[in-house]
Amino acid sequence: MFRTLLFAAALTVAAISAASAATTSVAVTNVNLRAGPSTVYPAVTVVPAGAAITTFGCVAGYSWCDIGFGPYRGWVAADYIQVVYRGAPVVLTAPVAPALGITVVTFNRAYWDRYYVAYPWYGRWGGYPPYGAARVTSASRSVSCAGGACVGVRSATGVYGGATAQTRVCTGGACSSTRVTAGPNGGMAARTRTCATGQGCTTNRAVVGPGGTVHTGSRSFQRR
Image (cartoon, rainbow, N blue to C red; front, side, top):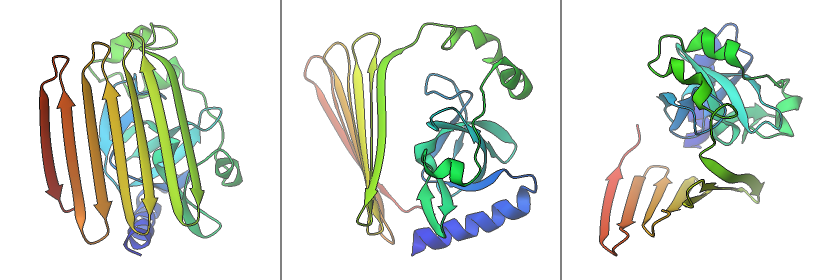
């Protein structure tokens, strides 16, 4: 109920503040707004959970979408975008996007020049894929929803041998996310975050160095 009310409130704000909106949407969680449709691009800003955003279009396959957030413009993975479809808030997916009129758009140098000329990394256009060497050799992403629960899984393997995998599960007013990253030299980092309506969030972290040294930490907080 709380998430539904938050979603409705954010939609109202977006409708007022974005008269030229393509598709009014909401950020599912805190997420980096990237300068391009990949995590290899620099972060423009952080979009907070529940924030009203405007979705202008997505790349072919609808894996990443071009969005506006306040004065910022950039790209967010579709897994983190929530829209209203058939009267209910849902995560933006390839079947849903065309039904809402969200079109396929192209990321190119003209886009980069239009929005990022004032940023310190503007001159490094040629250093990002497909122009520069990729830092990820393989990646996968999937989202499935059934029986009132949604599960998102993503993974990537780095060019030097490291790998990371993350699983996010949301059901019954609670979400949990577990991410495990293994370095190419044997180190490992794990983070688990659990959030429940009315109970706040708890984050647990563990880091294992290549030599076997273990560091752990835990933090609890209330989302506002």
